[in-house]
Length: 217
Ligand code: GRF
Image 1 (cartoon, rainbow, N blue to C red):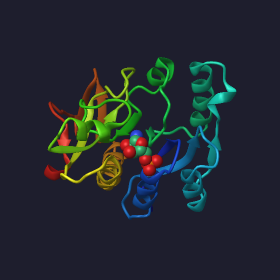
Image 2: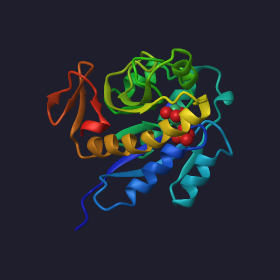
Image 3: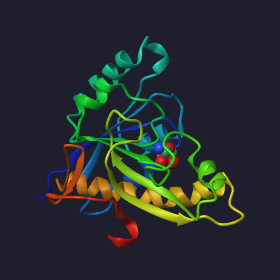
Image 4: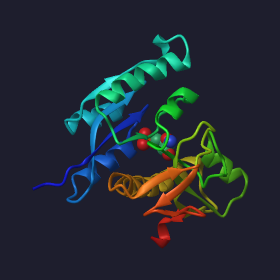
């Protein structure tokens, strides 16, 4: 008998290449998560097509239709909760979340961010790494807490910065790593191996003093 999968809902705003990586992962035998729905705040984006092609239900909830952040988030949450997900995956969802939303899903909200957090929270991370002359740049999967891009870090992957890199060449190499680390962490989460307790990540019941590195797992 097939093992019961952990339902997840993915939130996007754009291209959805991370969503695609998750869809590809769930086609692999043994992947423990099942994407039950994809929600976008923007209509017509490629990520919605990717979901439809994979026969995943989609919902577009335009943020412009809501008068404040929390009323928007409450509507998103009303849709999310119909799927009773074990985890909610932010995958390029370009919205700041209300404290209400983050607290409602405490310990169930994951995000991927294109920098080696705690460096470069927010936007334009690739340009910031170039401007700083960093030798390495990368991506991080983390639990979401009310502090923007500030939740406990789970897994990171790094790429070397080349002298001739632009923000877009660097972004492309970072995305390749994102597409590995997000399904990896999702698998741990869906297998019940990952928890957040008192803002600390527990993997297999053991606190992570530092985030894991893709190179070392
Ligand atoms: C990724 O770089 C992700 O880290 C960031 O937004 C981008 C989304 O890309 N949060 P995609 O939509 O998954 O292609």
